[in-house]
Length: 456
Image (cartoon, rainbow, N blue to C red):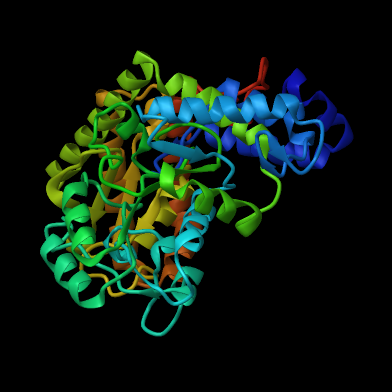
């Protein structure tokens, strides 16, 4: 595959072949999962560096092990760049860059300020929220946050926008100790000022989970939560385009509670290879080129939404302010699960997603599309128009199969593999491979073998 993998290919050929297959799946497919992106060679180099060897419990200058002189430099570099990337005053804000992921960052933040069974409010998962914001179904606690804390979600309206009036009414009656703004499938910006006003009325903390939109916030293409929030958590791998890790920003008066909650409260030794990878990506985030990239991400999302509307699809909020396009399939009378399945059959990665009116996210009536990853690879607005046409054709094919074989997903999957449809599916898949395989693909490979399918 390349000289980078020469040791693995020799010592563990089985695992090498699996990685090679995943490499070609990514390079010859279309990635539309909104929470995914393709990171840079610099990030990959950090992830595969000797920094992974070092144990470094504690904070820079206060480690529980020796030998951290240069590790401290790495982590301090990352912390400085994080504050600079979001234009924060170091006298007012601090940041912990050790969380292993965004969900761990959220949990650490909660446990730093809440007692068991304190009350929290976050955007409901079917309304575009996140599991770690306290999601449950009836008396079933789907995420541990709803077991540890008493959770009451707020929702979106039929038009797809957050119902701030209802949220305020619920908050005044429920009196949560923490309100969470942010989500994983919300295509519009947030009214942070309104959140702050509600929190001030009831004496609640305000936390923003900016995991999906941090790239837009850093480049000032969306509003900043920092003037209004007490804490801001985030992942680093979505629109920020870094490795899979997390960060917690906090106002300085909360520094000890947050740091103690991360370690030793929630996790052990930090992953310094990831912290270095975050640091190098945060340097890129501060460049004019990154702002140009984020502008293209948003422009591509808006074109994709507009084109799908021309085909008669209902788009939540009639558009987007970020990278997310949420498609309501109810008028097409087909579920998001079937569209996710047919897309995967042709190597397009999307995810089924709940939309307004769904009673459960486990049986969603929509799909969530994101434009970050393919914008990284070089897709432009014309590519998005072509993509919308491709998606429409696949959805029409899925409707045809459902009408012929019934509504059960198991029967739908069988039909895709049947002689009746297998050739059509393979033809679409090969067309996608030919279309995208020559687009930029950021990796460490200096030389790659040709994909067998591309030689046909």
